[in-house]
Length: 263
Image (cartoon, rainbow, N blue to C red):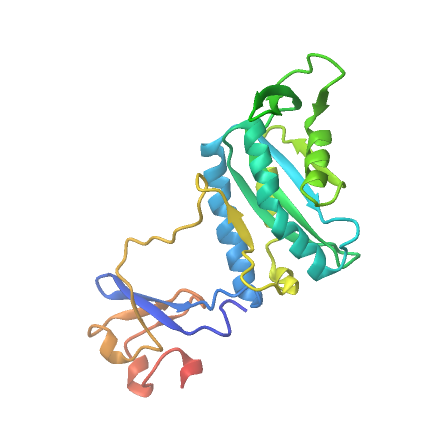
C-alpha cells in the first residue's frame, strides 16, 4: 500500500503555475504498517545526516533487564525505571555525550532489551578523583595498568547491575562509517515495536544534541478531509504524490471530490 489506509485527511499546494500537488496525511502510528515503515525511513535519513555532525566516535550498547524480571511487562518496566540512572552514571564517568535509544522485544522470548548509540565514550575506565567522599571513575583511551582498570564492556556490565538492571550487557566501539550504527538502531523501529504495548513509550529517544526529525517544506500547504474543484485554479492539473497519478481539469466534470476513496 502506497499510503496510510487510516489517513485523516489530505494536504495540497499550488507548487507552480498550472500544477498542484496532493498528499494524504498519515496517521503516524507505529501500529500502521505503512506509517511504521515511513517513520523508520524518516528516522534513518535524519540520523544518517545528524550523527556524523555530532561526533566521530560512537559506541553500541545493549542493556537487558534484571534476570528475575523476564516477562515483557516486567523487563520493559525494569529498564525504563533504571535507564536514566544508568545514563547519569555514564555522564559522571565520561562527561558530556549524545545518544539514541530504542527498544527491542527479544525474538525468542518475551524479554525486552534496550539498544543505544552513544558518542564519545572511551575504551577503558579507571578510578578517578573523590567527590563527596565517593571515589569516582574516568574514561581513558589506553589501559595504564591491569588492576583497577576495566574495559568499557566490563564497566557497562557492572553499572548496569548496580542500577538494578541485568548483568548481561554489551558495549563495543563502532569502527568506520556511522551508517552501521544507524541501521542497527533503526532496524528495531518497526510495527513490531507496538507489541511492547506500554503507555507513553517513546519508540525513539534522543539526547538534546541530536533531537528529532523536523519536517520542512518550501511550499505553503492547505489541509482538509478531501479536495474539490473549488480548491484549484481553472485549468490546474493535480499530481497525487502517493499514486503518481495526474488528474487533468476534466476530472471535475464527472467527479465532485478527490481522493476516490472519499466518494
